[in-house]
Image 1 (cartoon, helix red, strand yellow):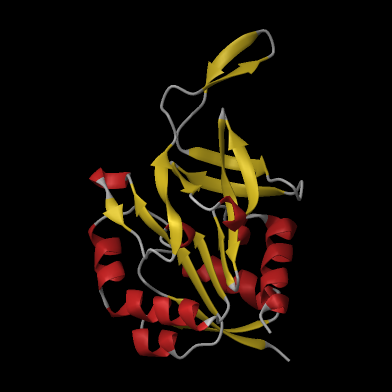
Image 2: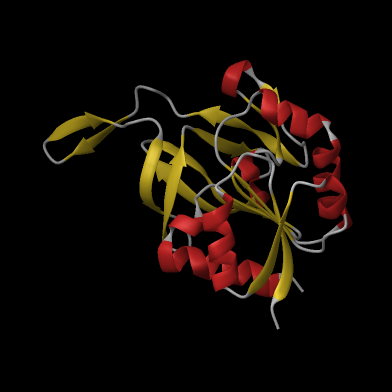
Length: 205
């Protein structure tokens, strides 16, 4: 029997591809932008693309932010994807600084613009944003990332998986009790991404 799951439409994510991936792994997905429906949901996924700014300020301070806090503080399963993961934390340096939901301690920082890597006999500058496939540890799986800012978690026990870009080791996935977040896009990560979503869904009991 398919698990009922709420996919939050906050105007920040590519809902169609996330919905397709969740249906593939056995969820009965309902999309809503209604904070009351989100607050009463038993499994919630919050996808996000874009940047911290006026839209995220409105979310954090408004009814949707309160609904997300209720779900998480109640202990129901929650997954934040990309910007959705970053919003779980205290703040971001992006756009001059903006508050997050403050549910996990830590901040989002920008990758340094001058990062370089030795590549064979020479050295090359790394591009920002970090875009493409990267390995996460300790699982060893590869996932697809697109981001210029990364989570620096204050509580290292919240970091479930990590990845490295240049000389920056960052949180690729986080977990605190029933709250999960992934910096990568599972819906763009082929079979590895589906395995991640399936594990989240199966663990949501």
